[in-house]
Length: 463
Image (tube, rainbow, N blue to C red; front, side, top):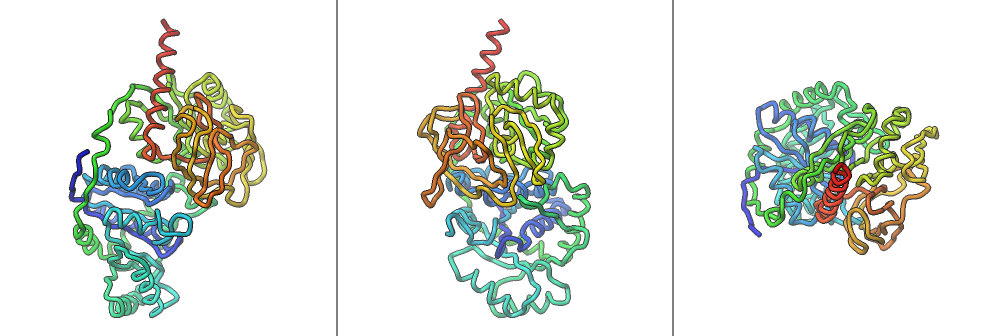
């Protein structure tokens, strides 16, 4: 396996905590750099789906997830190099606070990712409500654990206070302050129960991003960040894909993608395409039936509860999905997609709506997280994606509960707790967990092979 050394200008925007303003600052910097004509690649640490959608709106190409639980270190380095290699600069947005990781430790944290990828880190924190105490807070982050912190950006900071705070921090800590972001009226991003409202649902998203970029150009040392991005250790990675066949079988896979179903790992879709899949996108909200001549189907997570009335009212699509899935169409349905396959879905107001009825279960949206965090899925029976005993790491984040979450896999937590999950058959993998194919590429291969079997069977019937 080849080891490659590459020039990969890069930096990470990390925070002291959730809510520190990482997404706002990251989007402001990305848009400001794009306005300068730079080619950009963007990444999100961890399993988050929503923040990459904002990055994608800015740079016009797909933002990617880098997750050290879902994938091992070698794979993460490979994906980072492959997706960032042609860019003038790559920007990683961290997750939660810098050191917040798996099972109350640092593993799989933003800091872990920064160290694995030798990426210089900029720490974002609010610059209001304190002065010298900000230096004490930053001092703690600088000295708590080994890290790559190279500077600070102050968020929600008034122009009048910034020179004072910059002088204090640089005098006390000898760490560079790369500027600040003031409050920008009209550029706020709204939130709801799973995080920020998705970028595609904000009608004036481009105007808001331009407002952020204009402020950023005036208040953040972009030239300094670009210089920092080039002052990095050489980046080495193993070309893990070079030892595997790129095309396994040519198949057509339908992929639900609209405002209700929008949670995808872009590297999952790219891997399927590299293995020979032609992806056919469709909308369960707007289309009347599945695309023609499909060999497989993917229904992702998203916000079906926000659009339950429309989904339920599209009876033609529900019937099309039910007929094809019950007829053996190889199907992966994650979280929201699983809910769509169930008998009914009750939204947060308690109003129930009829869904596809493939799975004899009812789902209800609650007011608190039902399951959250990383798990390891281990198959209890042979199924669409793997054999009994095989496993893949996964992630859950949902407010929904189901009357039957499935029993095809065991979902194990790091603390030893476990439960049953996933409706798993020879042609279906449906449940709340989200998986990353790069964490176990055999799952993707098996899906492609099963889709090919479906195609061969359909062709034999035609003859």
